[in-house]
Length: 348
Image (cartoon, rainbow, N blue to C red):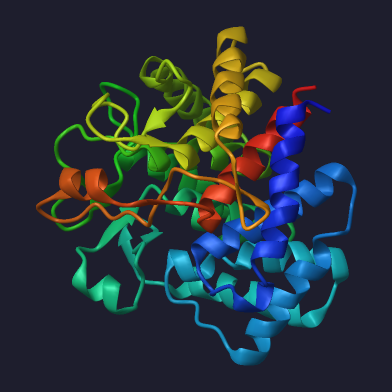
């Protein structure tokens, strides 16, 4: 196996030593980290992460959990993985609760729920859809729809990817804005400021949901995915990274989670024939740039340059992007690296 891919798989093993599953919160970053571990396990044909996932879900099932937004419903991904693998009722109960949330959540734009949901943030922030949600719920509901006989869910799920493109993809550039404010009927930020990880979520999520879509939805999604993949290439830095606001080169900072998510999508596009060789080369450059920067902390591999949770802040979106702090081993950043490693390995 390629040494850089193996290094990321070693990072996954070290992360399970660094983070006890019972200490992980019930939120989107931890959810994607767990789901990404499950994907590595499937790719390598190993069960070594299954017990780790069980410990997380069994802890929260006993403790209690709340599904009230795209972010707090994201753990349904790992629950669906365990439900299908084990058939156990308690995991299907989590899946069912998330399915009911999306069936009943108030729509703010066509049939799209408010990203921040019904919690306090959802009341304080303008009613909106965010690009993050294509990963936080788009993958889950399309996967769930594929294993149920619920026609309403299947129709709802199939419409979502194209809805994200309709409201968030910039007509001129093909890049994605962070959010769309429903009442104001505009994307936000209003000026062309494109957040790296948000575009990365699209690049990484589409490969995970595409096979679940019926035609002609598949053709629509392939079209906007390919347009985005092509649009991103000129913004890759010489060192292989993307910046957190990548269309303002040199003004912000290199960011590893965006870089890995974009690489994951490029690898997929090359493997499936949607993209040419230059995108494979760019993905390899991105992947190796991040893996070369992995560090050793407390005797374990550690991933740096991961920006914190990021909001399109009213009035000061660019300031907020620019000054969101960097850190090591944020769970969603680890997930980005794991997703990219799986796609890289599948390229052979």
